[in-house]
Length: 292
Image 1 (cartoon, rainbow, N blue to C red):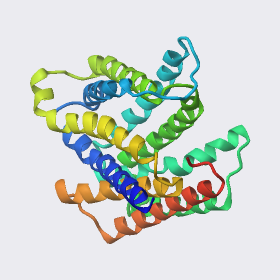
Image 2 (image 1 turned 135 degrees about the vertical axis):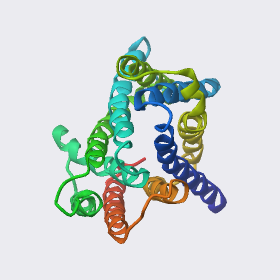
Image 3 (image 1 turned 180 degrees about the vertical axis):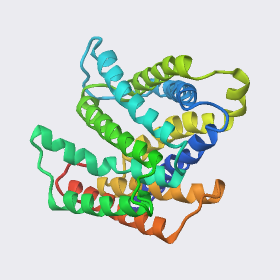
Image 4 (image 1 turned 60 degrees about the vertical axis):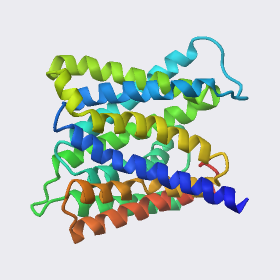
């Protein structure tokens, strides 16, 4: 059992690393293509990479009919909005800062749950205070102005929180792989429509951005998703929730190693406070049995 848990935790750590370094790939891709073109191709590849998983059998009872198309599309719209603000914001901020600010969805989810009557415990509010303080150190400049890219990433975190709530609501009713494929293709289609209106699309540029696009689509979506599914069969929920939160740490590490992004003491303090806030919120949700 210990070996299986260790193996599962190792796979989750690898998943967090893949997701964290995806911020580097997303920022690198912007050197060749526009943000919506990148997302259009990336999520199309993500959907295609999940197709082989359709052969896996599931014992989960599913709602029959065409409802999965509706709810998959709904999740895709939320994913489109979140990923769009994220990708546009990466034009104006670093991969590391984007990773931490996006990670705030961990705290925003239970706070938004107040709308449906859910209670946010002390850990969530402590996490919110720590995260907001960390956001100040991370994003507020000396003249008390807020970095434009960081602001877009904050909006992105809200839409990702909405996406998490939608997924949490509909996943018990449907095959998770089918749902993911539909939402990925929906996001790709919406991104392509916007790109056709506001960006110039050239095949040569897409080829030049092939490595960042493939990483963002195949590795971040297809491979990491598969690793997560496999690992969470044996991983305790507490381990899974906390380990996956380390995604933001890998985003900073990747930005520093591969993009030579400047990491100051102020940024490290902000990141540390935000990570502490995320973990505090996760521990609270674990104790309440809301992380599975």
